[in-house]
Length: 160
Image (tube, rainbow, N blue to C red):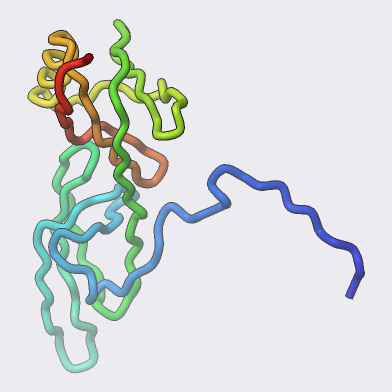
């Protein structure tokens, strides 16, 4: 063994994986799963028992958490499936630019300017209308597998 001390440079994400394995038989409705490389929320799970030497299989019906598409997958219940790390973070809305990007205030006082307005029409109009009225808005940003999107909106009152 050497007596030298090793110096490690800290990285932003610490090399954390975007997914983690979980046994397919333990994934339940309202949980998350990766189907065809997309993070999805499970809306229906059915387990089928197969023949003499086969595996029980889990049939997942899930909706992509970013684009709303319905995806299906069938996995042996004893096998591992990828489950995405899903995070929700609240940010205060500062500004909406003309090219469809939002400027958000993070908890430590920095700004985050790399997010687009959501594609969901009702949420989009709520954000634009509330901002035009001068309300203080807090948006919840859902992030998974390197993607981020505004998913909900909270009104915390008029600007002072």
